[in-house]
Length: 153
Image 1: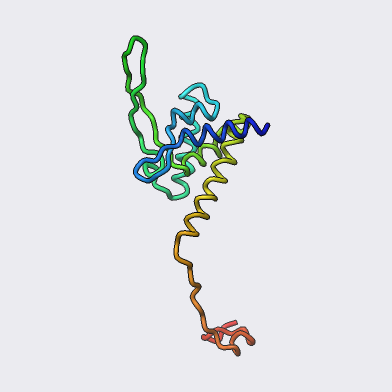
Image 2 (image 1 turned 30 degrees about the vertical axis):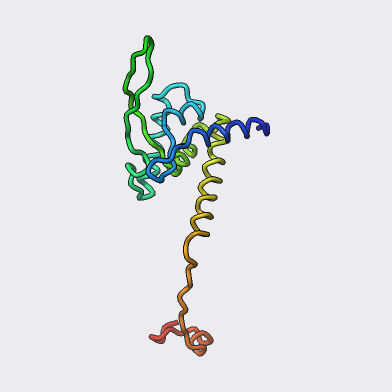
């Protein structure tokens, strides 16, 4: 992948992100185009696989894939409401992992969401209080003999 392609895709993904009530998210309809899917029906299959992965990870699907309605312009000034889904960064990551990896956009998205997720984790870690490990006191003779307090080995 060429450097200019990477910069362009990176910019597109950043521009597509929205902040809704403090949560970074993407529109599934917009992500569909960014990931190279021309038909919503095909992209819905990838979304469903991502939802399945989300459920298998014991995550609450509506927290990461809330359904919304969106108004789009139609010819002659008319408007139409369509189904859309807001996607958290985690949902986008799962979609990228379940997408068609032959698509260059999917390959890019797999890396983009993995890196951005890790970056957010590092920032959260830096902003949180340090975790102090609990000290466990074990008598030295127990360590040397390998016995537990009940005398078991």
